[in-house]
Image (cartoon, rainbow, N blue to C red; front, side, top):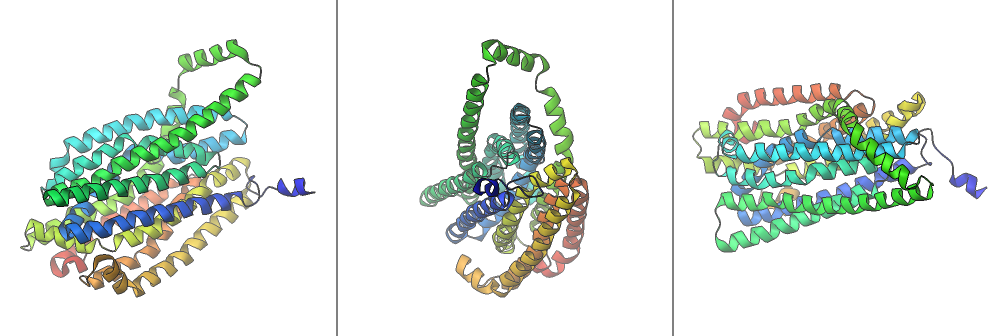
Length: 442
């Protein structure tokens, strides 16, 4: 009887409660890693000042855009397709998809690095502060590591194994913050310029990405060793192994690479809408402030004040997105089986939870805006703007969860269109309101 109870499965085909445990694990890891990432910004602003904080905040969306173009969509596509193939018992097909994803994202990451490095001066000119160029180049190095790590995360999430992703998230953030603090301390003692200090802060992403990739590589190696043991004991023998390798050489991974691109491209376009909203601010707010007579340094300092509440909003959204992302493979598996009742139940639960938790988070952050501002940044500057930005946690939470659900349902293009529309509206409102009201208008 115990055996039967332990083997119970839900409507989604997983052991009862397995997807909830996976969602909780990823959500907890996201909470811890984002908390670490939020704490890094306290010494960055307190020690280096609002201008360096503004430079960091202006460059990071640009880095996110290149990272999302290089990596977004494919990991979720890997997760979906691996879940479907495992549903059919095709474990080798899932591993082949992972290898194809590593190649695709490795190449796109290298391309993103070249684009970001060579375009650093132009990006800094768009931002409105030439000192940002060093930070853009420093952030580019992370593109060698982050996309490949994302591909491996997608593979393990497709297996409904969230431990590797959770471990790599925490390690990545811990190493990133440690490297940033070390570089910030060295730079402060050596008297680096504001641009160099911002570059040191953004360079932490490369160190964190390398550490996170190392964690995922260890899990991948262990997974491959298990596959080799199973293969050998399966009795296929040396000849079977030679034939398998020959087939891979002849057929190659090209069909899987094309499949990943076809499935992942709509999701990638949708995810690009998220950093586009940040880039709208980075490319408009400092320049609009400068057009009103502020110097480049003063405009970037004001942008640093405007960006103070963003880490708290991102904390809420990242946790919600991680929890929702854990549901995507289960939604895909239920759709593949045609179990519409399970699809409706999971999608409805995710979206309803997003509405209530997002609202509670937004209200709480707004009520505690002044204490948070003082606790994190040691003064009350731009308190009203801080509170208003905290209020965006509600809509951002619903957007993150709804985008994940729509992706699981094969409707990622819908969320992409809405997010891009929101970014265009944000640009128009910045142009209308920033000249009159400054960062409060933003």
